[in-house]
Each structure stands twice: as structure tokens, then as C-alpha cells.
Image 1 (tube, rainbow, N blue to C red):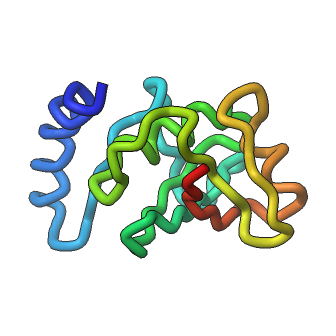
Image 2: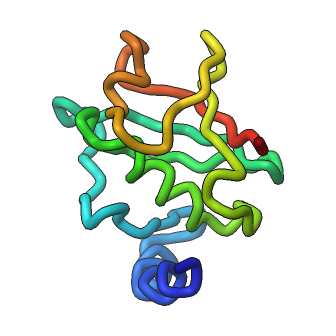
Image 3: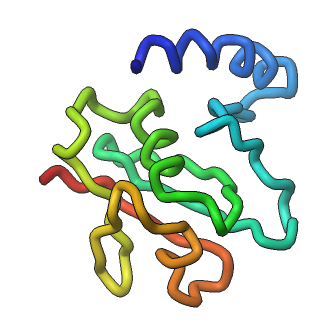
Length: 122
């Protein structure tokens, strides 16, 4: 599955180079487009990866956490860990998020439209 995501991402990466240095387009998890900045019902997600890099993306607050997990698993800085061998963890209060069955809005717990997550090896 990792290779198909990278292959699908190639046109988006080419587009990001056309927009300028530092711009980075990521694949659309579950076919969901990234909401515009400041859009109602949007939640900003920042994820610290095991290599210490941080990836950022906006999701609809009603998006399933499975879409967030899928996005994280396809990032360049993410190791080739099997599903179930890692989890996303909120920074404060510290809580492990389920891979599916909950929404990003539930994970925010009143966090004001954004959340910082860390990838944790189980």
C-alpha cells in the first residue's frame, strides 16, 4: 500500500514544486480534500514523526481518525511499521487515539480547532 500512495502522490509533489520551495502537497486520505485555512469545521493537525520532523495538515473535524492514520503512514518520515505497531498520542492530556471508530473532533476535546500528535511505537 505504501508504494501506491507514493505513486499517487507524484503529481501532487510536482505541483508543490511549481508553487515554490517548502510547499508540500500530501495525498488526500480517503479521497477527502484538505479544507481551506479558517474554514468552518476544519481542524489543524500537527504530527511529530519518529525522525523528529513535524507534518501538518487540515482535516474536517468530523473526519474519522482512520484518515489521519492513513495520512501519517504515507509520510516520507514515517518508518515502515506494520499497522497496529504504532499509535497516535495527544501531547496534553496524554491519550492514545484509536486507529478507527472515533472522529478527529472527539480527539480534539475542546482543543480549539487544532491538535498536536506524536507517533508512538507500541
